[in-house]
Amino acid sequence: MKQWICTAVGVIGGAAAWAFGGWDTALAALTICMGVDYISGSIVALVFHKSTKTETGAYNSAYGLKGLCKKGLMLLFVLVAVQMDRLIGSAYVRDAVCIGFCANEVLSIVENLGLAGIPMPQAVTKALEQLQKK
Image (cartoon, rainbow, N blue to C red; front, side, top):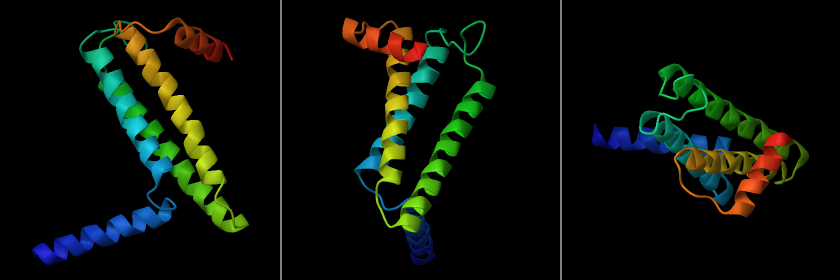
């Protein structure tokens, strides 16, 4: 039984790695950023009650599910980017998508840290304000 489970996990993991174009730094960075964003947003809502998603600022499971669904859609877009790369014989589309989504996730993390009351360097605050205006 143990060998069957290990084989199944290996097959599923291998298929997922192939589908996402391999497990490399870009995909690792994206998944880490996604996880940190989700966790930091949840902490802001659960502990500090300063979520911008609800009127009270408290945690709402519907918004948590919505956030997870958005991250799932982002990963689906990475799958599409992998197929575009395979179609045109390049390795640029997937990396560009991963980098773009990473940048978006980092902005959200910085916003969550600010909502938690963690002081931000003025340069980061100004950059965030400019990006939010655009």
